[in-house]
Image (cartoon, rainbow, N blue to C red; front, side, top):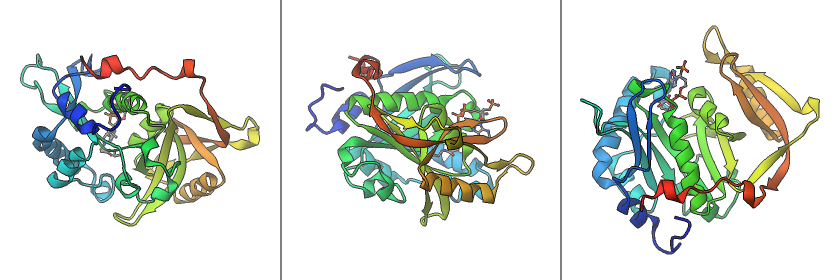
Length: 292
Ligand SMILES: CC(C)(COP(=O)(O)OP(=O)(O)OC[C@H]1O[C@@H](n2cnc3c(N)ncnc32)[C@H](O)[C@@H]1OP(=O)(O)O)[C@@H](O)C(=O)NCCC(=O)NCCS
């Protein structure tokens, strides 16, 4: 994929390779065999059905802002513009479940700030959209949650984005959606900014993983803070902690680790960004992504 002619729209590539599995495995909890593949416009009814199911099953308080609902014409244009959708399917040999879509995610290659889909594109780390990939609409059907499918698809996204020469992997997630941003932090993303989305009234965190560089953090003990973000009894975000989080992010702290048991977020003061020696950059994995 790194060898692709950059002028050739990636959609040709993604669509040509739709229906060719590039990650085959077994779900860690359920033991069911799955495969991941690119999806194309013939799959959209599956994407829409998964989205409708996940939305229907969200808690009432979360329905309004966890997911920005996409309709068919949006998804069609999305694919036409050279973005990608990857899906995790139950493997062909799974009786009664074969080829059922268990999870999907939208991989955005924005050409303009607006196309990034972020509420506040000024928070993007680079003005050059060629360097950016954003992920959105990450959905795992509740029948298959707890199998790390989001993390598995994210690993594929990071390989795909790196192979396409992108430098920044970015996402925007509701601050109270710890099941989602917790996975980003587990995958080495840093929570680096906070924003308000007037489209749905949500307060969001922005996560960033540089693909060819790494953030540097202060070793000063005063620059490491653990923030108890959630009230474990009531299960809700603590408003004062939320305000403190905004302050700390504005002061240059990053959220770098989340303890799922205590629900404490570890923040460290970021002091800069440094290149990763080429030898230590994970191989883009062209061979596993694109079956020949
Ligand atoms: C966020 C999401 C994709 C993560 O799904 P996943 O990959 O299956 O999550 P994981 O395998 O990492 O789950 C880790 C643990 O969290 C639990 N968990 C995951 N999502 C959960 C949810 N929404 N509610 C309650 N528990 C959840 C899992 O059961 C598992 O618990 P366990 O370790 O005690 O068994 C999934 O929750 C989801 O589809 N949520 C709704 C849509 C959404 O919010 N998308 C993100 C928009 S950016």
